[in-house]
Image (tube, rainbow, N blue to C red; front, side, top):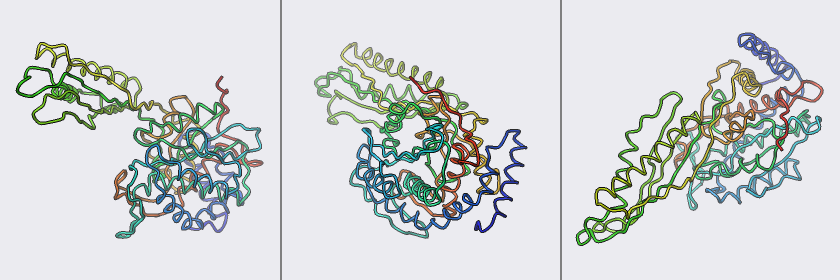
Length: 436
């Protein structure tokens, strides 16, 4: 598909208007964008930039960014942003890379467009990109190297075509999205910038899947401690491992609701020093998730009680009071949701319809950088960067650049509907009162 004339724009606009009527909602001026010669050219340029963007994606992938050690990749990303015209692009105190693209509206509305710098893979992981069976293989090749590359392509094309928005756009490469990073980058972003009106995370691939619901999670490490001793000579003392086992057995019988989806798992266990020793210490890490903050808190309260019961049972078994447990929260990701009639959700629907010529959007819940914005009541979505992939969070993660340019095209149209194209359309994103 090539955007060689306004014929594509007219066709797509007709599709989007029809979709708007079916939804009974006013369309954020996507038709005005799709008939604008500058935007039509930008969409063409994004497609023409596809191969170069994929090479950028592979370069980013080969820069290690293990948890809490994203600095080298962040410095590269800052350099690329500076090369694309953001001379003031900087790395903040948390490690996020931030570049501000000012609009004509005096700073509002302000929309954040982000992708995360970090991966789940530990230091020393081989991140060399390889080709196999028609796919590109490497840890993190899609998650989230694709989002980072798509954002750079988007910036390049917007600047090359001198696209001027009404609202400001803050482009951010965030740290700490994965695992025990605990969304530290985006938490710092909202701590330091109280004037953000909307948030988009480019994470994942398929553009017809949009995240408008934040799956919350609470993670705990439980440390069981007892006196320890020889398994024969001091038999009768309470065991940290036995207490942990009792706790796991109790937890396994929990029955959380299926709607809203709520889950739990004991993810890791460790403990003991010898096969013939009563364990003095044992540890387990537990993950709890829910699409409802209320249900997440209910599950957390019940699980904490069960762990205490398990310790009490182990002490009672041996008529002791020497066993204890420490509960330490190691992860806190709040839940939230953005309504289907929110301008940011509607804009995403319109953009997908325009790019794919079909209004086939699937809305889902997930745990992403958008969690923080959603929990604060700030309109947010997570959208895909384009292409196909699989084996997420494994060393065999794979990617194929099938229609990959759809990702930055979709992002461009969504952004312009929300921030407004200067002289053409008004921002669909409302200005929020600045937090005090």
